[in-house]
Length: 425
Image (cartoon, rainbow, N blue to C red; front, side, top):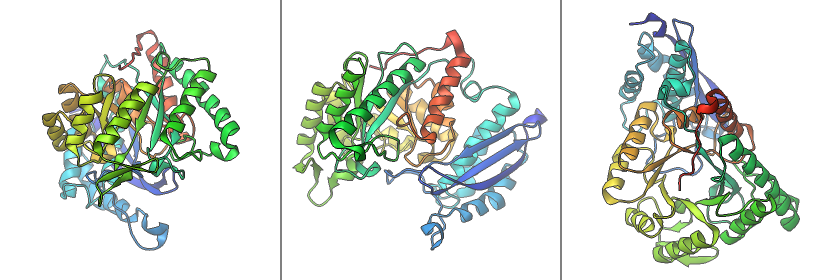
């Protein structure tokens, strides 16, 4: 055993996420001088199946404080991790799961386990003196991800009447990640100009993920605006750029009637899928996330049957980065892609297991942020390490989003001529 990698200290401090909500920052230090940190993000649009955050309740912070979670980290987690080899990520994460013992991280909190698990990986990489993506992925990790940028917000991420939660631009015609970001930023700027002209200054207020939240009520309005912005920037829809939607169907599904409320209309599953098919043809959609309610696995399978030959049908709420749920989806042929959010499952080891299972079944994986994110750029390194080829981390605005893009720009610079970039469709 190399004593340099032995964990000598684990501690936590309260931090704030991008909505000002308290979260956990964990710090892990090794005997060799390595130091790693991890910040836990939080979602607004959550699956009912994901790891549970531990919150204080009561009046302070409107019940969202994390003092209980921090106390658990210091009194229970830290003593158990001190003295182990930081390179044993599997051991560290199994200790976190054993200490919790609940099955859904509810005892010590998924926010605690997420922050600590990331910090352990960073501490090991720091001790080894190698970049995090290289430590996690090895010397062959050089594929830069295609960014999927949420530039118009709706649903739970905004205060407008758009049923669908995210409307995204995808710069697949670029030759490199840095070129993709330049193209995307130019379209983002053009979109701002177009929205301000059409709807007035209020239209360029931004939602949780940095996308604009214009006073729109029809999903076609949002897609038309993206098409106009792409054209204004001198690019072509269907070659330089494609579009994507995160429908987040849970949020416009009516349990009583079993209908979906879109653009003031009630749609059954079949009619909703008809709408997606129509939009896919007209607006060159190649990415469709959570198209139906999270418990409707047959609906996912039907969406994949109809559209999977020309688009990624992505399970987020359906899988919640959980291998047991993914196994059911694979057996059912539910989707051809899966979203990956480390805090949904709560540890890096379980996240990597999920990625391996998905890729092994022939699915694409998309490394994703959360709406209540932090300046932690961990997912940028993770995307390169596992060669996902796709990352979803918001608009090119707000520091908690740009921290991921800036880290990827840095990684591409480090890789130099070895960096690769390729479209996913």
